[in-house]
Image 1 (cartoon, rainbow, N blue to C red):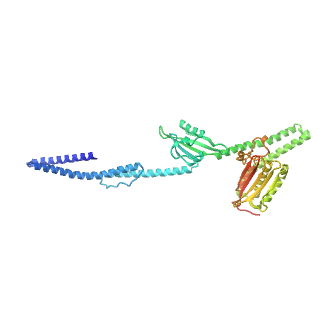
Image 2 (image 1 turned 135 degrees about the vertical axis):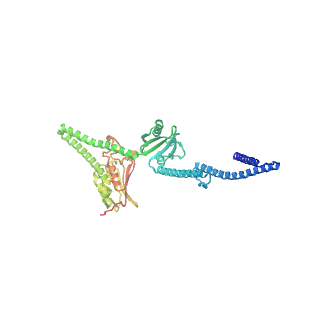
Image 3 (image 1 turned 45 degrees about the vertical axis):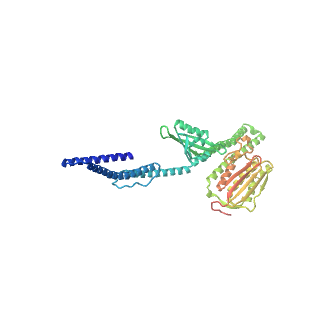
Length: 469
């Protein structure tokens, strides 16, 4: 700034000297000038005065202009840090008017773009927060730049918002390999990965997207989609086909084998004939039971809740009736049945479905009990629900098997030769379907060698119109 003023002063002084000299030359041409010391002094004083006046005017103008330029510089610096001060307003006659308008327009555009970017960022963060798919963004330094709550939930740990190496969050080899393969091949990858093994199985479909920002900069978007339910359904379907085939094959093979033996001449021996016919009859009944159980499951799934026949009835007589139907099996094992249900306890329920539930639970409690054991039935009522408990003193169920006993055809022992009692493996699956149809739930508590307690919880007031007797 001082150098600029020195240059301006020199130019103004030179301008005044040249102007005065030119005037003197013109005046000397028309009139003879008598030079003296006083005249020269006056000329110098005039030149200095003119220079001072012009310097003052120029200084004032330059000072005002410099203030405007300083305001523009400050405004541009604030804009670079995403701060937006008020517009610079100048009269149209000002030489910097056009420049100020350009700066104001630039600020307006940048402000609108910044607001738009902030709005999009908020929308993105909102979507990321509630997105059920786990998302993680990894940069070329292998550092996590962004992640959402679903990713933290799937990985079962907190993810720091500050940039850090992704290996602090992901220790599973299969997932780490997927990310490294994406970096090495620069290609998108996809794989089905088990995050948590059984019994708390959790399976995800992992997808990586490779994004090339420049020659040396890239990003990887990792997405985890929880497909545990789909995976479990597929496993159940596979198990269903396998077990159903196995359960159907066994009695059919026995029937065919003994029939062929009889036709080959064994029918001529009365004792062998009776024995083989009894075996064929037993296997035929097993086949009938299996088909009836499968049909029961299909019927339960096909019926809607609107077809339920709700009735208010006494619970104890229903339990007593089902117990009497199984008296032969109870006597065969010399079991003691304790019906502790109060005689005046009334429940609102679909009686036919409740009969099936009690029949299956009692049948299991009898079949898997020890000789001379005990079966206890009890019921309690709370504010909005009632529950039925069937407790036995049988062989019990292991913790691992308890996770799957309600699956269709699931048996605690996969080998028929190791099974304690025969059955289709559909009884508890039917119970669960019936209980769900009645808007309730069923749970199991068991210990190996001690016994099992099955608890059915049903609502006091079903969400449908109730027909009472």
